[in-house]
Image 1 (cartoon, rainbow, N blue to C red):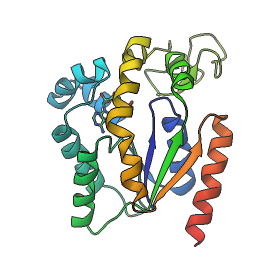
Image 2 (cartoon, rainbow, N blue to C red):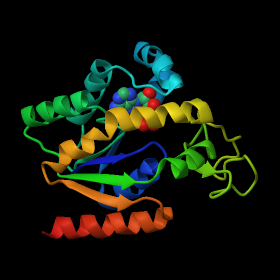
Image 3 (cartoon, rainbow, N blue to C red):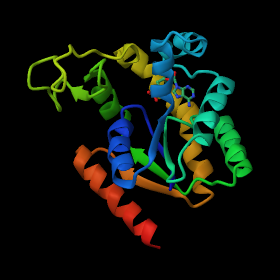
Image 4 (cartoon, helix red, strand yellow):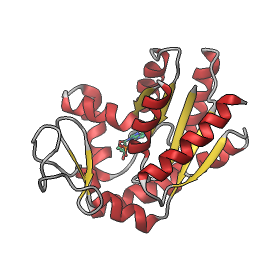
Length: 217
Ligand code: AMP
């Protein structure tokens, strides 16, 4: 199974990805996570990506395409779930070319739909554990002890690009550059829409229901 998960920043892609990869045994390929790992390791790629990420803009296509097509080629045969990639029409075209060269296609595109106001509130309240990556929210998903990760007792942090000013820019970038991909994929008839303005469990259940039905057909 090869899946692309689309949706604005804060639509819940990260949370749903964790659910989907566990349920269907897929490799989770998140371009944002890979970039953050590269930054943390201080690699050349990470340094190049830094300023684009911190401003809420996109890292140049050529850097991302090379990074992600390599990760996809190394993916196991069970399949993968792409999260945060592709994000521009150019990335989508290049992804398609690379998949075709390797006799692969994208089977399903899952599109998480949520309005900008909801997303802005979700993202600016989001906190994560710098060690294990667990995600919390200051109102909706509080840790047992305020500001401390339940798993390892580490102080939670806000991603620098989750600040209110940067979030406005990330949403603008999403509408201009990434939303057109939904129509691109719709032409292939592979897009399935989900109302993401619901609890994470409700969204998860509706995704599983759809994927289970699709797998059976
Ligand atoms: P994310 O965690 O997916 O929200 O990604 C965090 C940041 O990484 C984005 O705001 C971009 O600056 C950068 N990024 C992640 N994926 C891509 C991509 N496919 N193309 C360009 N930039 C990306």
